[in-house]
Image (cartoon, rainbow, N blue to C red; front, side, top):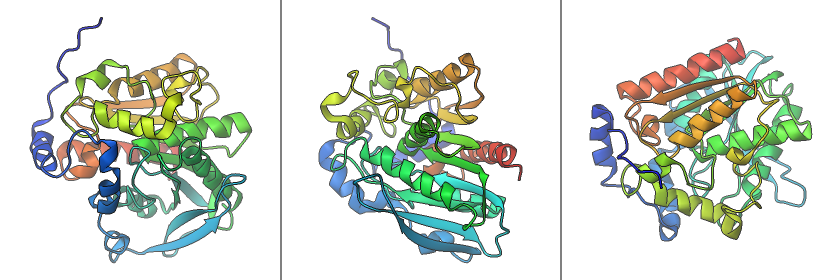
Length: 323
């Protein structure tokens, strides 16, 4: 059996933040906490406060969901005076498949509205365990199809749409990119995978190293995947669209940006995903942020490492979107 060494140490600045976070959020999220975590809204301020006095418009649309499933809600954000024909960013939120909403991550994606004059569309997908796989990823796919088909109406060049999300949202973005490839769906200009949740097996070294401390530890990962997959978890019955790390074929995908922290559960599965894309002739940009914990940039956006991570994403988006 592989010897499991301690996880890399936290960055000094982030470690101090984590001590405060730990007073509000336990490292291990168990199923009995799902209800209270949802009610708490992950501590995000209201949308109106996030937008503030920035020249950003918000519109809601109810659009068809997957065949036989309920409609879904999309939030559409654009800049006042938006110039038609610009880029689009399709956002799939995080929350371990069990919590969060389409505003989770808004602090970062609203900045992209202004940075790129991008139209950002964020999807409200159904959550597990009430709605297990394939509900979340199929909702996200349906929203992307609608966005692509209505791109011109929204002032977006359909050839310049990037999909992106963080954590579970990163895993869903990767799954939707695989589905779009396999179904002949929308052609994506890129996939922005921010510390994505890719592998239900929880079997990597990093998934063992981060256990009982940090943010979204090994036990939390079990909670999320169990909720999504139930008895199918860790079996051959798991779809590649639910757990993209299961995909043997990673050819034909849009260029990927993948980042992850060195002291988090997802480190090894994310590095492996980028490596396998390269092995199969694909394009990926990988960043491993030293001393970071899961979600570090969202919880400590002013920290030096967080600003560097977010700047790297913006730089990649500039390259993909020609902005």
